[in-house]
Image (cartoon, rainbow, N blue to C red; front, side):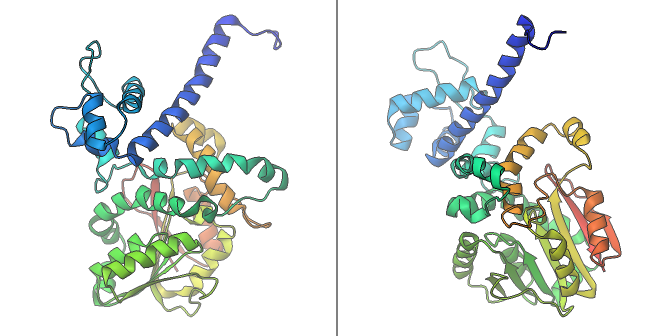
Length: 363
C-alpha cells in the first residue's frame, strides 16, 4: 500500500471521523450556553415543550439566537421535537435529559465540565509553551469558574451516595465518626464533602485542605452560610497536614492524580493517620496500559484530552512534577505506591460509579 496516496473511500471516512470530533466540540459549547443561559432549566419546566419564541420569552432572550441554538440541540440529539416540519416546531426534553442537564441534585447531573468548558479550552492558548518547556498550569489557572465546575461535577453523586453507600463500606468508620473522629479531606475543593461530614457527624471535626485559592474561597463562603463550627478549610502550604498519627480518616477525592508530588502526599497521609485509621482513596478508573485504556474505556480519548488541558497540566505545574495525569493512577499502581508509602492493606470497594474507583487503604 502506497502511504502517500489516500484511498478515496477511506479518505471520506477518515474526514467524517475527524469532523465528528469537531461537531462534538462545538455542540459541547452549545451545551455550555444552554446551561449558562438557563435554557435547559426553562425548557425542563415546560409541560408540553416550547417553540423557539416561547423559550425566548421564558428566558428573556432574543428569539433568533434561541432558534438557532435549538436547531443545534435537536440535530445533536440533545433535545427532541416531534414536528420538525412545522413552521414553529415544539422542542422538549426527555426525563433523562432533564436529569443530566437541568437537575443539579440528581446523581447523573452532568453540567460541571460544561460549566468550566471555556476555561478548560482556553488552556489551549498555553499548551504550546507547556509542550516546549514541560511545565503545566495549576487549577487556579482556570479561575473561579474552574473551581465551581469541579464542584458541580462531583458533588451531585457525593450528596446522594457518600453517606448511605461509601461510608458503610469502610470498616468501622461510621462508628468512629458517630463517636467523634478527626478527619482530613485533602484536595477538598469547594468543601462539599467536608461540610456533609461535619453536618452529619457533629461529634467529629473535619479539616479540608486545598492549594486552590478559588476553591478555598468558595469553601469558606459555603462554610459561613452553613453555620457549622466543626469544619474548616485551609491551605496546606500555610498550615501543614498533621504528621503525628492523629487522624482517624483521610479522604482524597479525584485529586491524587492531579498532584505534582503524589508519592510524597501518600507518605504524608501515612504519617497523619492513626495506626487503626483509614484512607479513603477515590480516583479515576484507569488501566495499567494504553492498550487497555483505549480498548476498555470508550471515553479514553476524552480523558486523555482533559489530562493535557487540566489534570496532567496540574500534575506537571512544578518543574519536578510526577505527571500522573487523568488515567495515570490505576488500581495496581495506586496499591504499589500506597505500600511503598507504608500502608499494608489495600482493598477496592464495591461501589458503582461511572468514572471513579473507590479504595480503602489502611496502615
